[in-house]
Length: 346
Image (cartoon, rainbow, N blue to C red):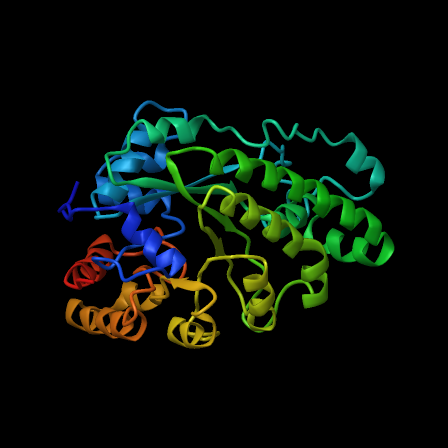
């Protein structure tokens, strides 16, 4: 592995950020996702050719985050739902590639998992066994309610069904939502899990994919249940969602979401979000991926320092990208950002 970033870590300091209960002793780090290629380059391993079932996979994964001074291990596991091959004739790898439910008959025939086992919980136990003192998992379900429904029905299929059979769309969101909530309840009961999280990209540059009133009807009730399940165990709930969500940020806060991740400069810089909503939801990350990828070290340090000064004055922010650690991001550039963050005390 390239240079390890050493510091004393304590997940309790990150909890102060998430709960906005006190200034942490140092600036915590947070990312929603790191691509296998980035992890492979950082750890100098063949991680990008491995599967979760390969020996050493989770050891590399945990060591990757620990080696950068993180006090949490972000991880998510997919629902136990089969998806069609993305190689259907006439469709791209995008939204229509996995569509398997077009009508109520498809819905009834689909092999839905039992709520007792909505996901494979074993990886969380494996990671728990690898954690040193002071480190916790921030865990959840891969893809959110909107993402799963739009995958299983296709974006076009979902759009047509909203007009032709809105009751079926309601059943889809209710079923998917029940599986997510069941998974969160189980994870929240795991002592190794310090906070819960959900990724669910709800929008694009100028608006949400679904109208705000549909999000309030179909998606946000599940967020509310997941946040409540987390809070029953005194654990915060984090939402990662890309897109322009300005019209529904108040609704998301009303769901009980404690912290928000994913920010784009062209939509709403993280500093602006903090000024408008920081008393209700903690912003996480927000450094532009393109700036990190393209900047020289001196420029990058100045950029990171400006973000830190703009977001960490009250202590309620964590350093990280606005989206994720991509395959094309230079590892050394990201380490430069983290090194700048390590100079900041509470």
